[in-house]
Every structure is written in C-alpha cells, then in structure tokens.
Length: 170
Image (cartoon, rainbow, N blue to C red; front, side, top):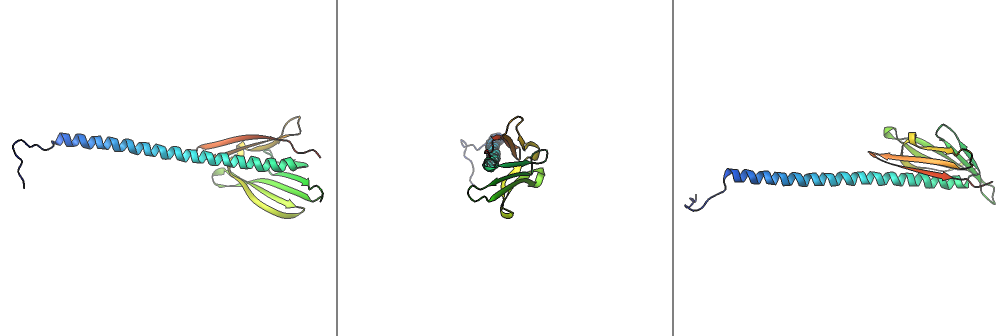
C-alpha cells in the first residue's frame, strides 16, 4: 500500500458524515418533491374524469329531455327517468329511460336505454362515478322546466353541475 506523505491528508470521519447527511437531505427533498408532483397529477386526473362524467351526463339527459313530449319522473331523486316523444313525420314513438345502476363503493353508473316503439334500440352507459345522494332530476316548482343535478366523485375529487332543461312544447 502506498504510504501517505507528510503533507497529504485524507478526509476525516466527521467530514465524511457531514457529506453523507447532506446527500441524505438532498435525496429526501427530491423524493418528497417527486411524490408531491405525482399526488397532484393523480388528483388532477381524477378531477378531470369527474368533470367529463358530469358533462357527458348533462349533454345526454339535456338532449333527450329537449326532444321529449312526455317526461315521467319517478322516485324521490327522479330516477328511473322516462322520456317519450314521437318522431315528426313518421309518428314513430321513441322512449328513453335513464337508470342509476350499481358500481363499486356505493357509486352508480348512469345508464341510457333507448326504445323505438317497443323494440330495444340501444343500451349504453352515459356516465360513471355518479354519487346517487347528490344526483337528482326534478321539476322546477311553478315552472315547466326541470333541474338535473349531477355529481361525480372519484377518490377525494368531485364535480357537481346543475342543468336547467325545458322540454319542447307539444
């Protein structure tokens, strides 16, 4: 082994410990910053999913309610919701029924079933992560319009929208 010359010095144990502590602090800070970025990104993603779900629900329910000649609201929250109209020119009857179907964690899916006459035309899921306790379709008192309130919840994030819809006149 090479011997140290008289003027050469190595690092002391204290100096090495200080360097290790500083590296640990810097690594901890970087790790905390990365974890915070990932958490914020996850929450923002969940919120955007909620926004899209309530927008899609509002779009579909509004579109069908605007066409409806008959609106049948059942249940305390307005679901199942049945909308009926006759197609102009052909007198073909269209019926659309919206139901809240089970999902995990007490949340629901908003399902749309469309019938032409008595024949099923389509059944699809309009929105997911719907909070049934904060979602309703009710007639506005003293008015011929309806209020559709829909809330989507995913994780700790939620979004609520209120749509006022007035069906077409007969």
